[in-house]
Image 1 (cartoon, helix red, strand yellow):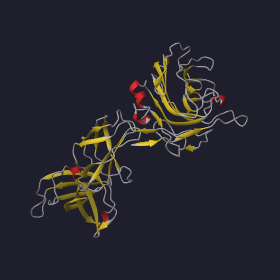
Image 2 (cartoon, rainbow, N blue to C red; image 1 turned 180 degrees about the vertical axis):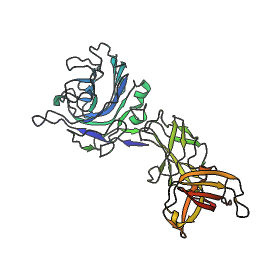
Image 3 (cartoon, one colour; image 1 turned 90 degrees about the horizontal axis):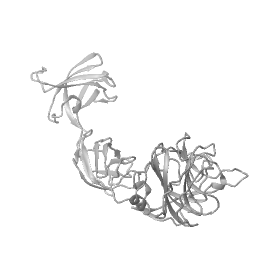
Image 4 (cartoon, rainbow, N blue to C red; image 1 turned 45 degrees about the vertical axis):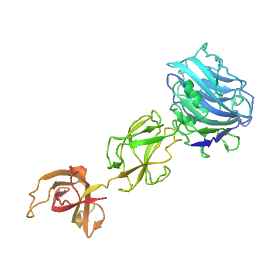
Length: 426
């Protein structure tokens, strides 16, 4: 699966109308430890420091960390604008797509070194002579894409940004290499991921909060020659441990590859058609997630029984899934069906004791089990109120549609009576 990147278009808004450039803003996911930021960028101006991210307060000249592009790709760690240091790499170009990674190695909230990578080329050395480098002293932290927290228009970014992501860890060399050709959402489990792949940017991507669109006016670009990216490998389901499922069944294991590890926004769906985009698909309950194995509890929802259904894994980041669903079926749900006088319609808190079929009209069979807190359906059937109880709710799993149990039903506090029941499948 591949696509061409779309882009968030950023323009520096000139004074005297305002001193601010355009930006997108969200809450910082960082509290302590190493972190990394990566993006594709297309720079249309060489003026100023041009940050593609900054972390710090939104009402002060203080900011904690920043990555910018001008004559070099630079990473900064500081507590005031007068105290900073940089880690230069080779020079970025104008009017061309470039890829940047900046890695902040931290012990607690103290930056110990910075690495920058431009288009796969690592800076020749780490930055380790940072002064005043505790970047966790100012809260609350916010992140801005395309402008620093100092609100300085001379430091705004002009151009395009795409596939912007943040990881609360130092990216490995293998992960940095993968980012040159792969969606950022499929590499290393980013905690923020903004692909800018939708003309409606609010809530796009994963992690973080809804964009704060204050001081923001962008155009949605598709025509600036974006590089083509592919997914990080493929998502494949090779085995589902049980392909004939019961609603609510636990311990179902999906085995395969490319699921992503750990799970963040990954989902498992069962669809009525071989199409993950089917609006009638039902999300399953995930109990455990690994790159090659997922454990779920089956949720049937509105899906039909005894017909082919299709299992899909949507990888963390929401960019990849298996192209063809793995075929399973749901067994019909067996239920105890009871018909009583119409006055019971809609009654709640219904209790009952279920027995095996009687002889001579008396309750002489063995007790199967009891149910509580059930509700009669609101509509009538042939003038009678209808009660349907899943057989698992009273321990009747061995009952089949050929059985005719009897039920002693109590409607709230009043005994409704001894009623012949049936077992149905739906």
